[in-house]
Amino acid sequence: MSTKQTFRIAVLPGDGIGPDVIAEGLRVLRSVEAKLGSIQFELQEFSVGAGEYLKSGDPLPAATFEAIKQFDAILLGAMGMPNVRWPSGVEMTPQIDLRERLGLYCGLRPVKLYHAQDTPLKNYGAGEIDLLIVRESTEGLFSSRLNTVPVGATEATDTMRITRQTSERLFRAAFREARKRRSLVSLIDKANVLPSMAFFRGIFDEISREFPDIKTERIYVDAAALYLVQQPQRFDVMVTENMFGDILSDLTGGLVGGMGMAPSADIGDKYAVFQPSHGSAPDIAGKGIANPIATILSVAMMLEWFDTPETKQGATIIHQAVAQVLQTSENRTRDLGGALSTEQMGNLIVETVAEA
Ligand code: ATP
Image (cartoon, rainbow, N blue to C red; front, side, top):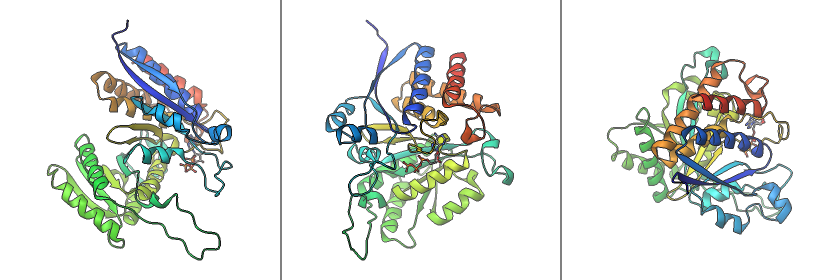
């Protein structure tokens, strides 16, 4: 019998480019497993998303939801297709349901520029970009998302829901992340206009006193968008509510080469889901050209989160392999101006891990 430490992972490839990028993420995971020799991964795949809805009438079947909670972590590709909608007309988004139902309040979205050629700011002296967006992922302006607007209504309202309990936990998580990085937390809000955001800021101020070693700043979200374009290198950890985080993380993805470079982790007190920040990218689905790096880096985040010396070493090996592969200008998928397929990029990273 094996004495290796085993990590059980529920794999949800999902829709569109999800299965393609997950396939490469899993190959990299297996190469890390082979490299380290001391740990092993047990994988089980589940069907979730728009494709599952077309088969069973439910994009996140109850039995699947119960089953995936038994795993150590959940690895997700992408979900939703524009032409598969609820009768109300809205797209199905089981990834958001998962965040809410599993209490994954802390969305971690690291943004790192691996090579100067990949930023659209290259002619403006962008310098180093290495920041982390901590996005609240269960409330905020998304909290009205399941409301409906009656036919013939003459107005519609969405609510920005901010709770003390979630905000305290979110801010503590952001401060702890800053301790591992450059010790600066920027609160991104709209406290000058919205009372819910002034409340959010008040809680931030309270929690900041628990972390006297961490520098803080408070920036309105509109100014944050400006500074991200003008001087992205000034940021370390940026903490914000759900909708602002949604928007800013696409902006920051764009700063480092696009959504194919943007990994993420949705973390709660008990469960965690790891997935690229991008969606199912229907415009390139089925073409084999999606960039798998966001998913591969999300796999690294999962290993980091397992928090053992071996898995952390695995995460480091992946980061180094991605950095090494991207040092060569030609090693790019189409979104980064290159010609590699999803699989070819996966191959390069797998080979580099094996040689590490
Ligand atoms: P969602 O709302 O589900 O996040 P979205 O509508 O914002 O999805 P995405 O699916 O993230 O859209 O795609 C946005 C753009 O980025 C598309 O042009 C898509 O082709 C591109 N894109 C997303 N992911 C990748 C990837 N892994 N590789 C290359 N291009 C990508």
